[in-house]
Image (cartoon, rainbow over the protein chains, first blue to last red):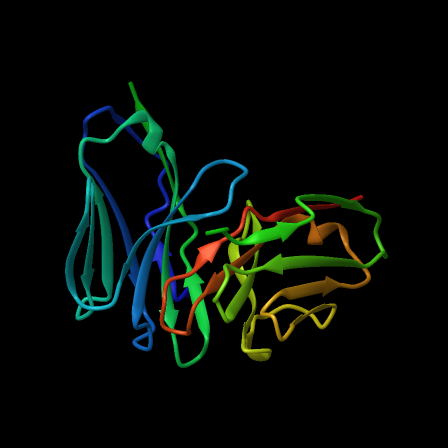
Length: 111
Length: 112
């Protein structure tokens, strides 16, 4: 079983919809949780970086971490066609010096 | 502030050859990580360096090696290239072990 499982998608939504992207993990050593957005043929771009359980908001993006359930989510409000990309969740074990990524969810927002 | 710079951006090599990829981290960042990204396997961890020391290594054969220099720049080397090594190789830098990581645009390696 993989340490990080990400809802596979693909996901297709109309413009303006609320999008929910989800990951679960099994390694209790993970301390930091990240979401990246990756456009085709580009490097991943950091969207959110969180440490504690709870919500963190940045514009239209909200990251949610539930350490007790080992579950993280990214919500995108008022989705735009420019949000169409692959979204990657990532978890970091600082002591081990290693970050583990989910396989990604491809999102398409239709005008 | 300049981002993470990876060179070259594209590379075509023949099976059996070796290749060296370079990564210049964001100024002031002391940690560099390398990843291999393929459509079938996603983002796979290769190595992480902090202040010239390798902190961790992923499950890749010994043909994959890396190092970090005193100016934090890093290189990775793949020897005896195989067709399956064709991938996007990504480098990420972070200021310390606990801070967020920023990726470069990657080096797309094609082995023919």
